[in-house]
Image 1 (cartoon, rainbow, N blue to C red):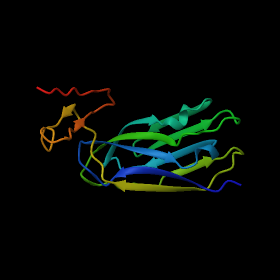
Image 2: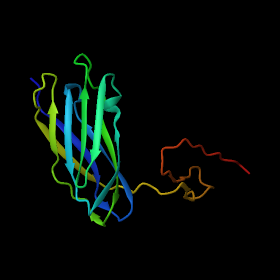
Image 3: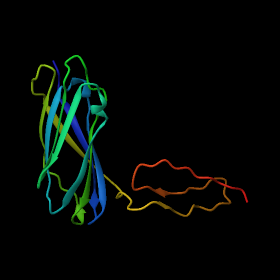
Image 4: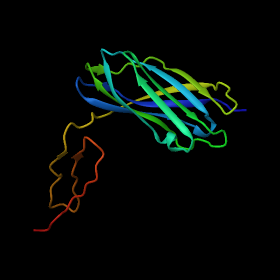
Amino acid sequence: AVEGITISAGLPEEIRTGELYTSTIRVDDPSQVRGLSMTFPYDNNQLEVVSIEAGDMFDADNSFTFNNVGESSFVIDGVMLNAMNRFSNSTVATVTYRAQSNGSLEMADPVLDVRDFTNSQMSVEFSAAYMPTTAIPQAFQMAQNYPNPFNPTTTINLSLPVASDWHVNVYNV
C-alpha cells in the first residue's frame, strides 16, 4: 500500500514591492503519482503571479500538465496518461510572481488532490520552506571582483535576469 507523499514549496522569507521571485514546487516520491490537482490560494494584494512553468516531472512520455492563474489562486494539474509509465523527476512547477507589497510572504494551505495508479486519493502533506531569497535581477550585471585581483583567487558576482550561457575571459596584462 502507498503511504503518503509530501509536496513542498520553497518560499522567500521577505518580499519587496515590484521585485520578481520564483518558488519551486516538488513532490517527494513522483513514481507513486498518477495524477494531481493542486490549488494554491494567494492574496492578490501581496502577489501577482507572472508565470507557471511545468517542471521536469512532466518531461516523462505520455504525461500532461495544465495550469491556470485566477484572481486569488492558481491551479496546477498533471497526469500520467499511460499506466505503464511512471513519473521519475520531482519538480512539478516553477512559479514566478511579483511582490505587490513589502513584508513576509503569507501562503494559505493549498487544496491538494493527488491520485495513485489505482486512482485512489493519496495522503498528502504540504511543506512550505521559508528561506532567504534574493529577487530575480532586472538586468544583466557583473559586479566588481573581490577581494582584489592580486590575490590567488577572486570572486565575481553575475546577475542574470534570464537563464543564459555566459563565459568570462581573464587576461594577464
